[in-house]
Length: 256
Image (cartoon, rainbow, N blue to C red; front, side, top):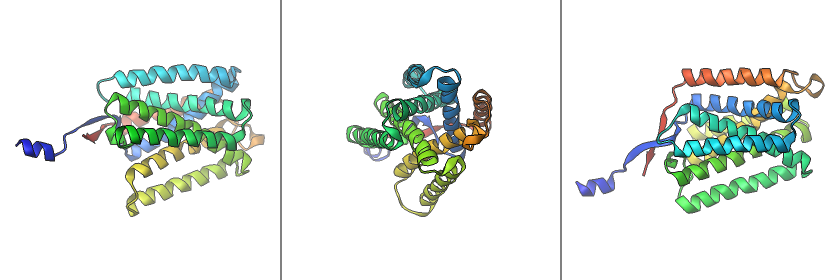
């Protein structure tokens, strides 16, 4: 019996949700909210990128601490933390790209380095970067740090593609949407690591959300719809809350 216990994996529940279609729909809405919400605080309220970053960073840290201290998966807490990463990612990327003057290319390169570094240290420390392993404080800390870097990188990539590359918001949305389709096809049609594909999709949903958010609230002269950032944020929040009711959020299974 003891020998069987050593052979058979012990299954439990992770502190993150199962990756389903509902997960991705809510994730895209959350990243879009991060753009409109971040811009609402830094631009519409005229607080600036640095103050906006400080506010959202405090919310992010508080949410992560609450998430790590929780004994089990709580959908509302989890998605609150995700939204916190998207808003701080928006203002932090804008601060780095614009206020510090390093530009979209420089900001994207810096953030990509930080993201890959976080994944590398996580893998070296715990042996895996799979979301199914996120059930310990150490894994959760790496998980949220990596997500914060990915959300910030996504903001810079979205702005770079829409503005510097000249694709505009709709063109950039099409590009990132097609890239997500390619990742989905690779998931079902190839043997590429599902962990690699998860992080690829997770990263790509952020620039998609960023350009969709910009499309909603930027002026007509810039190619946007000129919607109020507050209105757009409220609608997106309503969509997320509805999604949490419609798409049941269950904790992912984990194997130790």
